[in-house]
Each structure stands twice: as structure tokens, then as C-alpha cells.
Image (tube, rainbow, N blue to C red; front, side):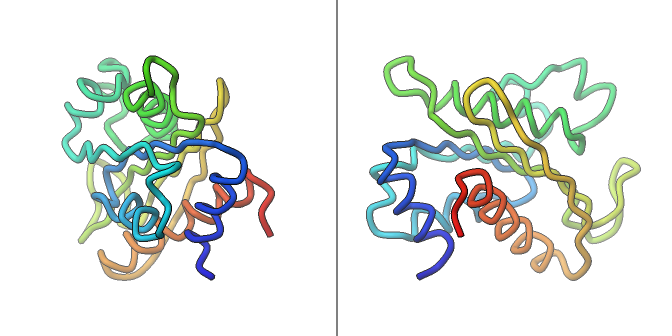
Length: 161
């Protein structure tokens, strides 16, 4: 079984929902989850907020934060994870878990951040954990590794394995 399959099974067993906000990974993370049969029971959906302004308008990330720090910042990731929980709510009830990715896939640095720098945030309830990553490789390698690190971090927080 894959890690995504294990996560879908665990979320289903616990009756927990997950909502995904992606920038750097551009939809790869939610695609990994929804590739698993039965994912529709727990995956609320995904938002690809690739453009910086969408992080504010769709996910509620502070415009002041984005102006001061840009999109590659731990607090941006945290606010994306919290925002997607609210945005993809069920009749006003936020998703149980918000999962967000932001960073620089390359090629090359962007806005003072090196290629391969990324943040993954997982929001559960009122708290959010943020993982800071430095990944080397091609653009595709970086994006795929952020997906796998996101799933691994969620598994840790759910105490799987």
C-alpha cells in the first residue's frame, strides 16, 4: 500500500476531512490523494493558488504579510493551511485538516529564496505545524519530493507508522 492509501484509510477510519492548498506543487498533492479509491469520503478538495494575489483573495493570507515577505515564508504556508480549511468547509464547518505547500521549484532562485526551498503546513484545529524543506534536484524532483514530504508529515501528525 502507498502512503497516500494509508492516509486515506486512516482519515476514513477517523472520519476526518482534508483540504489542500497548493502553490509550488500545482495540484500534484491533491492528485496523489484523489488517485486512491475512496478518497472522495475524506478529501474536500484542493485549491491551486499559484499566483501570489490568489493566496490572499482565495485563502485569506494577509496581504501585508505577502507584501513584506513574499509567498515563500512559513507564516504564508500556515495561513494557507488555515484558510483552505475554512474555504473548503462543509456547511460552515471547516475541514478537519488543512494541508498547504509553497516554495521555489526553480529553475533558479526567486525573490531571494533558493531553488528547492519550500514550506509545508498542516493545520489541525487551531494549530498548524510548518515544515521547512531544502531540496535539491530538478524542478520535477523538487515538486514530487514536496508532495512526498507533505504526506510523510501528515502521517507523522496522525501517528501512522
